[in-house]
Length: 224
Image 1 (cartoon, rainbow, N blue to C red):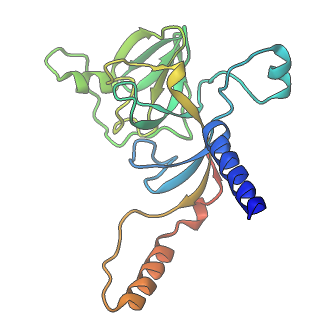
Image 2 (cartoon, rainbow, N blue to C red):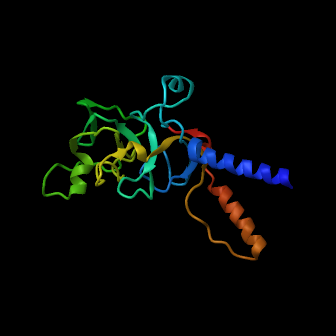
Image 3 (cartoon, one colour):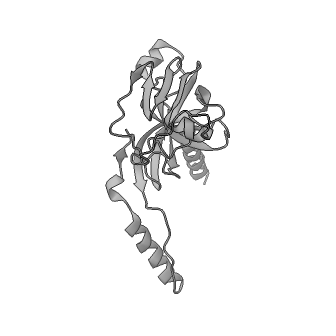
């Protein structure tokens, strides 16, 4: 019994260590990252990669680095740290960000975003002061200088994303970053079908319904 308890305690401590410092699972709740990440995707997040660097030796031995432009990151929502968000980092500390007629520019250069960014609305809102701030900032923003130890993040579904263009705090502080999304390990279409009958029939219908909603082609899909 003692050996069993010790093994169980070690397993729990190891699982908590892995979840806290190495990798954690998250579920995509909204369409702000479509078509790259879909509602119902379950992803693994590397929490180790943005860890502190203590020495040059650790930088060489351990896969630790600063966030880069293009990383898909999970972080605490700056305006409500109790919630987790996922967006794409498009600018790092010291970068100047500007959006002109939906086109992203960093340090004066147009950013090539083909392969992940999408627009679902053909309209382009101007900078007119007669428009609501949310409309003005969606398609035209900045120029804005990213502060030290902060990151500017946007959703891939650019016309349907609440991101750095709209937040009160604008950018994500370094200490709010939780990790980098690396892989979709499970994907399920949202929605639950109604079930009827006795308990065994309902269980069978639930299992059948879940199986029919699986998006197996997305399993083990690498996040880019």
